[in-house]
Length: 86
Image (tube, rainbow, N blue to C red; front, side):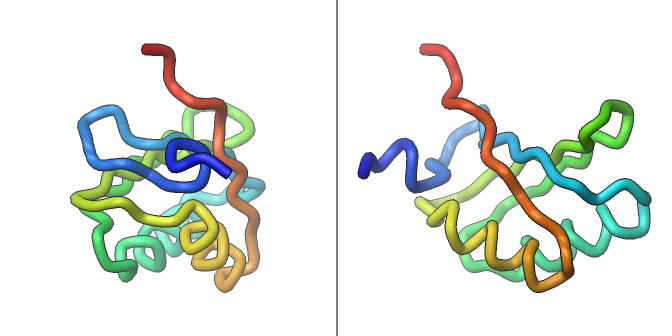
């Protein structure tokens, strides 16, 4: 376990997740649900690529597992992309 692999850390880089949601309405529902988590500052959707992606920015450390569970509650999956390059 690593703090970087298990959490989304605050900052302007965020964490990118891939999702199996395809329709824009589903992505908007995912965004609304993830924004309900404490510490989530912003969720940016990228519907131009496949598979669809969304980027989560936080104001404090948030568990990736919590984000995955919020997306699962809508009926889709969220897979975190690899860590950013330093």
